[in-house]
Length: 470
View (spheres, rainbow, N blue to C red):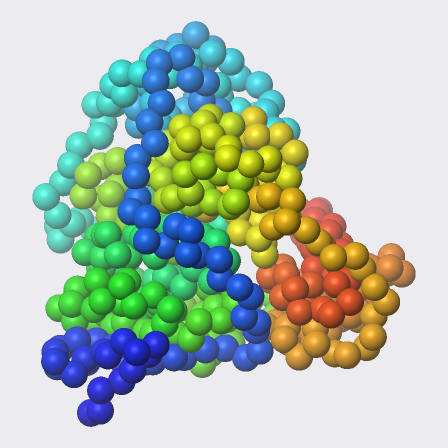
């Protein structure tokens, strides 16, 4: 077998086991774009812990996942410990919420999140002691744990998809019998510009990623594990390669650097050449996809007994003094976050939670870091500049590059006509809201923004109709 190359990085010539582990090189999906990566600010910066002291106000929204929101299980004035459950629900599609600090419940009130919604939240005043809850107990391994026990551990740890979707992980790992899963993919693509946390996690904790994948493989017996990494991350590939080589049933897939390579449907196609059906889920294609940080959270819950209390977040942009990758306690306000990272070095014309392609611009930095927060961008006026819209020239670039195979300009026309039914007939609900159409449009039409708004309205109508039929 010949040695394979990717960006001048040689894979496998000197290590036959590693060569066997890397079975796919430069795999990709149909269409897509290549935005400027802008990762040079933080990709070489190791993960650092941001800590804050006594008196900090921590905010824990009760809706940090897809599904039924939690209800507080603590009361105002009660003392809580780090790792203590503060919100939960009896619903299956739900994930409990835990305090990331010890302190006193100061209030339970509605608080704004990055989405702009006012969400019932538990407000805790940090006492600075980080006194740990006694239920947090490490384990020596997982071989003696059954599938049901592992799913319970993951559920009770409050683990959700940390790549941004927030789908409860225990639900994802419980496919129905009529949807057999044979492939579990660990998503290490991180195709969004600016964001580098997944890259750093893969470089710094590759052993925990593979161990977390082994736990998922025990839950889904008979499946194979694939760790998918874009070919612009040679250090991550180098770090993961020996652990994948040493683990039976696990392989390393090097996929082409392209946006949105990290989207579930696109990654599944790149790795397996299977297509998720319209309106379907990854399990309909026999796959489960989890972000690398989610997999590490599974490892942490099983081996260390720790619930999800922290998130690795990229703070970057021309307006922040010390751009980097930071381990942040959930509940920390964005305003406190930037202060702990050194403050501003220039005026932030726009603050974006998430990446520039799919993130949300916020108007108030009093919002908290939640489970799905992957980064915060503090952009200068030059970085945030958006060219004015011009008339569509019917060039078809949005169609050529749409990774979902849609016709964005047609959907945009449906939006302008306020014709939701036609929007649905044109498969608008299959849009993955990646923003590729707006990025590639030479006229800079606000295609993605308009489509996203109507898509969410139509999805809400569909959910309400389904609820009415129950």
